[in-house]
Length: 208
Image (cartoon, rainbow, N blue to C red; front, side):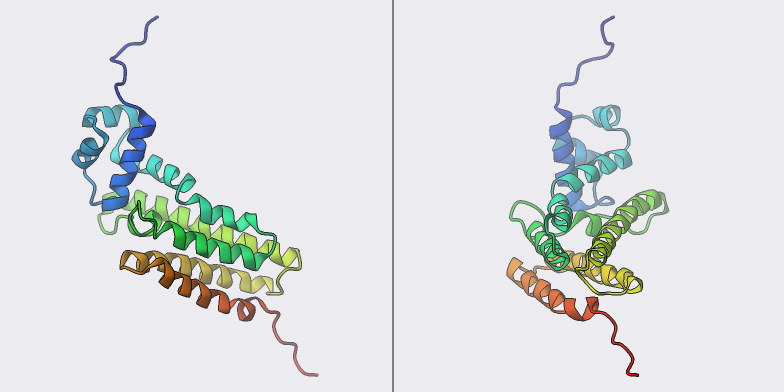
């Protein structure tokens, strides 16, 4: 039996990337369906038919973002056998991504999130869950370093160290949005890594 309905006259993958550009530029709350329709070159009805609601489209966009711009920092955590090198590479990859010439200078996970309206609660929680996943990934990499004998930090300190470096990542996004250059962010990375030895050292043993 022939499929019902009119065939699509647009490429969904291309349309999704166009939607990503709009959400990245204006954030979730600042983006309207008319903005999306204009950028994607399709009618609002086609957006609903192919992607669902604005929220569903945004969720798909964030999955795409995670595999593109969000990919290098995440991959850096597993690309280096030494834990210090992995964290350093994650910070530098973040700085690279948020100062690209062809994209807005900030991370969508941090600054595209909705802020106030109650109807956007689910979107806020969706993004918060992804950020919590980032924190967990850093914590897991530190825990691997402890198991490998690569760092001496006691297990109870790992959560705080992971939160510190995750906070540096998020703070760099705000700095980039406000005009910090790649070179200036490299100085931030250097400062953060200067704290590494103190953060990951074994606690001093009491004097007998």
